[in-house]
Length: 186
Image 1 (cartoon, rainbow, N blue to C red):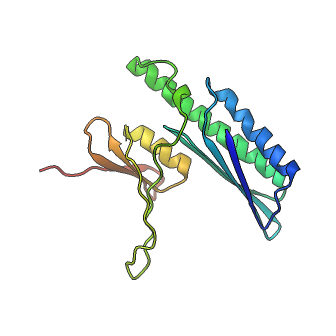
Image 2 (image 1 turned 30 degrees about the vertical axis):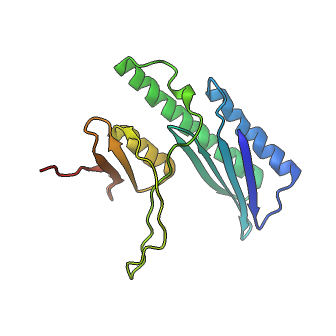
């Protein structure tokens, strides 16, 4: 893992950097082969509140954690706990899918580098597009798309349906359940 640690309103000292690398480095035990991905860590302080954002992009998974706490070291610990839960949840889902489909056992270990990013277009009231992101659509089923959306903390996720090959969108409804948007083919 290659660490990219930066601070906002905070000087990243050697002790903080070592602590972050040590704690996040423990996540390697969940992989058969250590992922060769970059780990982006953003530490910030606002009004005596410490905030840590950790993003670990990999091929089939984007791990992301965002935590606020009074103590920076406690915030790091909480962020790592969140990432561990995401990994275990994803690994359980992959293992369940492997048993159902009879796929190779070590699919999760092959994740090394992020192939896609998340699409978000921010629009203002005057309908001016102020930000555009490009991303590759990964073929997956709607369950995996919901898992990715939850891990990213977004309200929607665009993906290619692995059964139909069409672009679909999953989204979180106001009642907390999920919806799926499929194109109408004529």
